[in-house]
Length: 247
Ligand SMILES: [Fe+2]
Image (cartoon, rainbow, N blue to C red):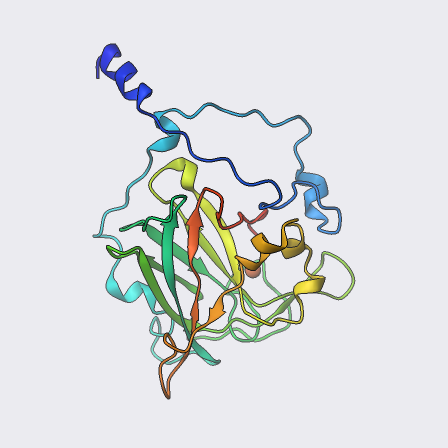
């Protein structure tokens, strides 16, 4: 690409909306102890949007197969626990669907144990559950996973600390600027008030955006409860970014 062509492209770069104040986790939230170590020591630098931020990786269809969204059929037997369907739409900051975008999830099993070397808490592993899946959204931005409701699990953040049941989500969207790693929670969990990861998001409405809705239309008779969880990449209604990768 010639310099004038690149310059012409740059003039068409449309910046993403900045997050609403309070809608994302506080970088330093002392009840969540790991933030004390991780908080940046210097003021953040706001980078002007360039092609690098508004364009990004595009994943082909070949590597994601139809069965990758069903976490209950990855082994010879069925996993133990409550089978659920988790479905929703991926939207951009203007409410438009984001088609053909990769949605990845990972989670603990029904007993609250991850199939991961770093998880050694005394709950059983399930030989029929690995806890990871992926899905490419369709034309209307829809995704759908079949899985097992994850259990709560203890972590060592503070005395008697337990994470509410949650599913981790990772999305790339259409550009680097829309990258999102977050967690979905289940409605009515009694652990919400005690979870410093959820509580590190100041805005109550933003916290609510991380809680899925039970949905009778998604529920399949005699088979699985259904939950709806829409995800918004950037903009006023953006889904809050999680402030950690583990647990
Ligand atoms: Fe987790």
